[in-house]
Length: 136
Image 1 (cartoon, rainbow, N blue to C red):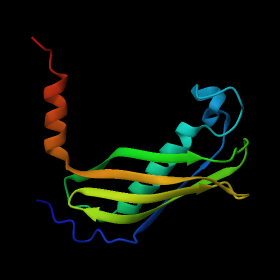
Image 2 (image 1 turned 120 degrees about the vertical axis):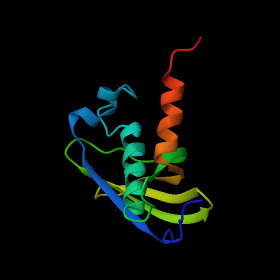
Image 3 (image 1 turned 90 degrees about the horizontal axis):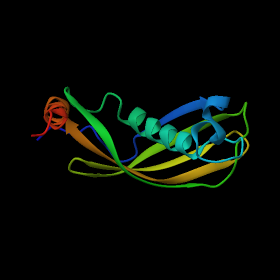
């Protein structure tokens, strides 16, 4: 098993994105109102969790998002910058659990819990390649 001893509860990460037309619900197909899209919020929260792990995973390992439980509680218009934060709250073997939140400078716009799994990258890619082969 990989050495995950540098993964400590309390590690923090963040990610930010400007709300542009391409990130609106009307553009990504998640609604009819021109506000920051929930799928973009979720992607930003995942990016914050990935940032939290930067430099803490063994060589040839990465994390994959496997579960999200997120509430998108306030709208954000175009032109604002949304910042997501992730805090590692539990390490259970390869399973990592994060508290995530996001704000737009005016208020908190979302929060939740995100789970990632640490995988051996070459092994994972081999499994993916095998799955991609034509089936008989």
